Structures are given as structure tokens and as C-alpha cells.
Length: 330
Image 1 (cartoon, helix red, strand yellow):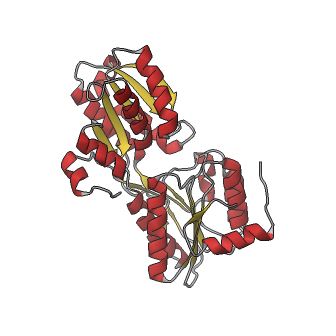
Image 2: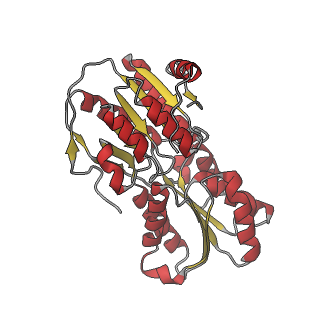
Image 3: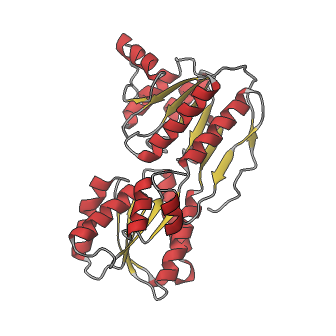
């Protein structure tokens, strides 16, 4: 699965990417964890890289924009690589990054359980990894310096609690999940916990992988709607999936009749809250993740201790908040 690309074309592409945006080449817990880690002190200016799972989502692109802004303001070099959800591409990018002289890299795994090989190469090269947004599996956390993310489990709990309030007698619901992503698994588990004592009153008529994408989720939601005429609500793990479900409901003439519960509070998700397409949305905080990760990477390189895990709080976004922060992530 590992492919090393050593052509001059890729090297040139990486050099160009340092000057611009991404290239396609290759349970509720305290806000901060107790474990600490530190590394050998190194003087700046620094050279950072961001290796997300995709840039075809405003969540990741907002992080890229913030990392780029922070690096430009500090006079640091910056590179972003986009695997477009392809694990093999990301493994190649991780491998190549181990030879690029970066001082630290920020990584969102394409597959939480699939990137140990790439992490090991960075570790062998002495390059610290800050794992952002989606945590790697427990067995691989020895290869990352810190995990910094929205508290996905908490976000799920908040949405589940709201659904339990909205449907005190229970409901028939469908879940669009994304099981290859650790953060999305946490969201679903949190959601089920949030249903609380009334959990048994909720009949999950379908739970399918919407792949966190509108175009994948919409036909799945259409099939679920056709098979369940008495469906009450969808819970979807992110806004693109929720927008797919909402589009299917609109096509069936069911907008406002079947609830749509989401996690993200992206610009599109906030617009959906304002126009009534979404019933409820809990916030993810990509801009705060990028700001915190940048700060902690600098502290680490300066020889300071940083937290092994930092979980940033989620909250339910009201219509008023959605209107005031229209077009923005948080």
C-alpha cells in the first residue's frame, strides 16, 4: 500500500505548495487531557505542513486558511497536501513529508486505523505530529504528540438530548454515519447516549454509511424515506450528510415534516438552520482547532510541555447565532 514517489515532478509540486493552498499531489471529558509531552527545543522560524483527509469540505479548507494565515503572520513556511480521501495517497504524502524537513505536521487521517505506517516514518525522521480533528486509533497514539479536536462525543450527546426533548414519546429515526472515521463514530455513540432514559422509545429503522458527503447521502436517504413512510427524523454525522438527507426530503415533499439533526454548523449548515431545513445542529470548531494546534506546535518546538489530548467544547447553535455568524465557521 505504501508508495514512495521520488520523481522531480512531485518534489517541484511540493515546493510550489509551500507558497499556496493545498495541492492534490503526492465521551464527554474535560477540555484538556492530563497527559503531557515535550520535545527538544528548536528555534524558529518554523516550517509547518498540514495533511488533511480532504480539502473538498469547508471544514478542512477553513483550517487550511487559518494555518496559512497564522504561518504568514509569523513568517513561517507552510505546505498543505490534499489526498482527497484516498488512503494510499495520504500514505505517500506522509512518507514524502518525512523527507521534506518540516518542523511539525498537522494530520487529519483518511482512515483513523490506516496511517500508522506514515506516522512511523515521520516519527523516525524526528518530525512531531499534531493529530487534529479526527483522532487516530488508540494503538497509534504513541506516534502523535497531541490530539486536538472538537469534543465529538459531546456534540453527539447535545444533539441526542435535543432530539429526546423534541420527541418525548420516542420516534422512528434514521442515522447516516461514517464508520471509518473515529470522530464520526464518537458522534453517533454520543448521540445514542444523549437520547437518555428514552432511548428504547426510539426505533432506528436504518443506519447506513453516508460517507460524510451530500452526493453519497442523498440517494441513501431517498431509499430510507421510500421504505419508511412514517419516518420522524434523521440524525446525520455532519452537514454535508444532513444536506443530502434534506435534499431527499425536499424531493419527497417532506421538508419540515421530518426532522434533520446535524453536527458541524458550517456556513451551509447555519443557512439551513435559518431557513428551517435543519432542526438542530451542534458546532464543530475547525478554526479554533487550527489556532490551538498552531499554538501548541510552537510551544512544543520551544521545548515546552503540551497536553496529550485537547478536546474543544461543542454547543448547540441557535437560529440567532446562525444569523449573526452567517458564512463563517467557528
